Image 1: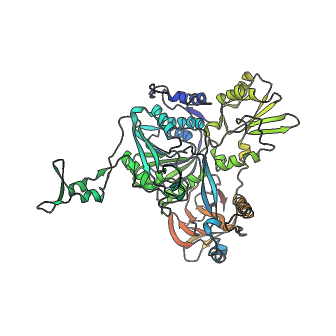
Image 2: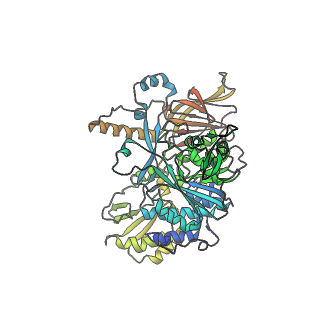
Image 3: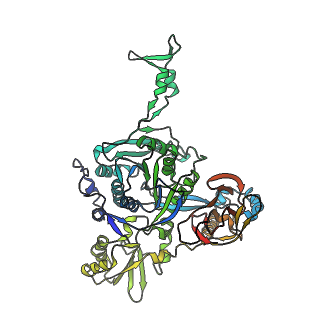
Amino acid sequence: MAVKYIPYFPDTLEGQALLDNFVRTKRLLRYRDGDRVVERIARGMPYYETDLAERIGQNPNRNLVLRGECVSACAYLKDRGVTVDLVYIDPPFASGADYAKKVYLRRNPKAAQALRQAEAELDIDELRAFEEKMYGDIWNKESYLNWMYENLMAIKSVMSDTASIYVHLDWHISHYVKVLMDEIFGEDNFQREIIWDIQVLSGFKTIAPNWIRGHDTIFYYSKSEDRVFNKLLQPHKKEYLDSFNRKDADGRYYMVAHGTVRYRDEVEKKGKPYGDVWNDIMSFQQQPTSDEKVDYATQKPEALLERIIKASSREGMVVADFFGGSGVAAAVAHRLGRRFVHADVNLNSIQTTRDRLVAARAEFDVLEVRDGVSLFRNPVQTMDKLKKLIPGLRNEDALDKFWEGSIVDTTHGLTPVYLPNLLDGTTRLLDKPLMNRIIHEALPDLPDDTRRVIVYYVDIDDRDDLERFIRQQNNTLIEIELRDLKAVLDDVVAEDYAEWDVSRANDGLLTGWKVELRLFQSDRVRRKIEELNLRNQQQALDGAKRKYAHLSLSPEGLETVEWLSLDCTTAEKDAPWHSDSEIKIDRKGLVVKDGVKTDTPWDATIRSEQRPLRMKVRNICGDETVFVL
């Protein structure tokens, strides 16, 4: 439950641009739930308590990695008086696609020779990898625009007076978001529409019966006229420099244009300003083997963020990304001497960014915003299995899509069930506007013999006050039963199991301590592999030409370990984590020690100078479990 609500602005009705010359954005937002968005913005941003999960270094610059949604992250910053000087966001594009990352089994150090022999005969990428859904980009237009409007309002509320924002989109929704941004930031503060020429020329796209899509759109706005902008220069193309083909008595090359002499060496020194069409930054489709890649579906190249950060910020300023993904904005900001705020709802994003920043020797705090997100590791997977976790819940074609399904029993008959959409943070809070809609819009459309409905929630405004509201407003004979979804979500992920030995290191590699992992079992990974085998088997039975091989785990299960860390500071299981030593096992089974890549295969151990008190183990799907040693 939110602790309090923080105003977006001193008066949210002043200072907004009004687009009176054509259909107003507020009218555009008059889809279902549009009024509810306006009411929420008037009330303020929900502020939740936060937990310090980990501190890397001393962190004097107060760099932040927050697991939480955009609005709750902005509420945290605003409550502490933190403003940001540059925002880059790469939100979902409303494209109708699910994004996933490939998950790879590692080599089992207990059976390394056998696995090396087996892998020589198998297509590793196809047979030793499976996909883990990260987030769903599946929206209807009105829900997406309502959601983006609230996010952009929250972001504006924490921007400094000289701040700028870059919003990265594509053709699916960019034209609608442009109208929203004109409304929120003002038409006069629109600076440029940047075209990033991604030049994706896959075989499928080249034969498409249409113009070949080859660009993304980035909208650049400032908060006010007083913005930071550093004009960046690029080298001139060789063809242009070769046109300076005359030579004077001193041997200097020059050309004559419009009666004026310009010398080649002077032009080379000045360079050429960048325009708003960027065709010199390769996408990862063009460089599939780039060293930057971290197996994150929506990852953007560092060169893209470097240009934006250099142009619209100065050293020491704060760069924020509230849909942080792979952490490229934070990593580049750190490299360029800026401070950073990275926020994302997805656990994979937090882990990927944390590891990336550790390798870059950054110092930062990892915070968990207690807005309900921490109750599940991945919203997409949780929604996929949520129906199975609620006893008796089934699909019901006779009900409006507002209801997730129904439960049928002898006492109440057909009972419609409402579930918040975990992919849309705006539905997690059960408040009076939502309950008003349930009472006055959803209940009257139910079958006449309905006697009860069940309404699940992740967060609730004030349960006692809401139940009074229900008694006052509900003039139907239908009972409304409120249920806390957290009780169901607690069962989504079971903790992993491990067995280990702790001893003093005496093999000459390191003086200190050694933890050897003997056994690691992950129920989640086991189930994922079972699903993969069933799918591959079915494809083989259906006559698929692709080779099928059954994937199995060893008794030790060590091939499902991706990362380990030792804490030599505290033995309290729930205390903030302090990583005194950590290793990551890459796809080839090689060790990345404290962010530094090595050529050493993992030997099932992790070492530290001091006696380890706790161990944290991350499996290849991203679940982390803490073990007191």
